[in-house]
Length: 348
Image (cartoon, rainbow, N blue to C red; front, side, top):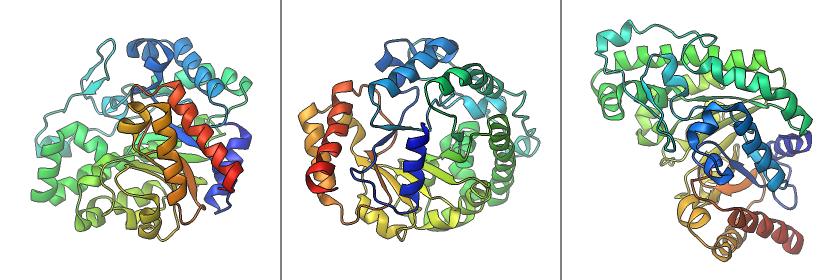
């Protein structure tokens, strides 16, 4: 993100209303390599291709902020790999982390990874170290420490069904595992911040929150996210594009001040659920409209979103969730231009 984009983000978090409203998108490997025209495996293994793809995005869409910006990642394999998960990387499909298939007793003996040396984490940091001078040259800076959340990682280590079953049948073992993962994540986020002093935000992604009831959110999500978001940074960003009506009221207590959700819930409703304390990033349908619609349909959906807003504060307009595969430049321009035109014509 540029300095101006960062200042716009901070002003939006404070409740200031910029006109036109800011536009931002989460972009990473599901969208960026194919949009740029390379295989996913080349995006992961070539620092030069990774950098050029990100540079092309910021040059093509200068009126949008990209979150977290220059995201160094290996898909869902990034953090599970540090625990020893076997990872599969097809040439042009999304990578996959295989469950460890451990017993409850094995989980207790699971070593705490060292983010400096274990799994793919050193490659994540080294890619950024090598490319940071050119990122700065382009007028951007590394702003976020990024990680999958503790519930998400647990589900990849065990398997989703197995993890949720253990949560119901053995809360003690579940708590031990989540404490271990959270301790690892604190070290991993701190290492990123130590490596890049420009970082003043953390970004956690965890869709597993959407599968929990209220009591499970209190017991198995709130304490660990609160611990992670207690880091001394300005921006505390959470992504969960699974159902969020149950967990949304807990976001302020977790310390979240920026939230990207699924498209099934409106921004107005989420403002109510979060007490107006959280800046929201959304919210048109990502696949059915932004990816599969025509530019005219994207514009129509964006105008409808603008017209539905009852309060323009604490908003960054986007799609619900990250940028999905297959979104064209024409559709992204249609979204951005409609927001810009709405701001000029109606002061939105």
